[in-house]
Image (cartoon, rainbow, N blue to C red; front, side):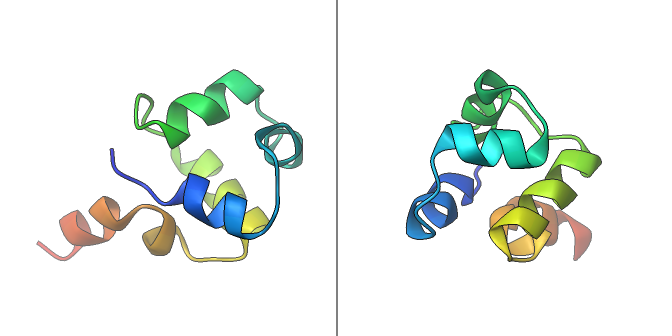
Length: 69
């Protein structure tokens, strides 16, 4: 799944470690999400969007595209 998590995180000056702690997930899970190897469950998508101060559709454009089909 293509996503913008890493780009937004880096733009805000957050490390993976810090964001993982804020979202209450292991850093390895966040890394897998950023690399597109793991499809995040809805609760994690919400947490990421809240912590990064963007909408879920901005972080995960593919979800927005499938919702409009």
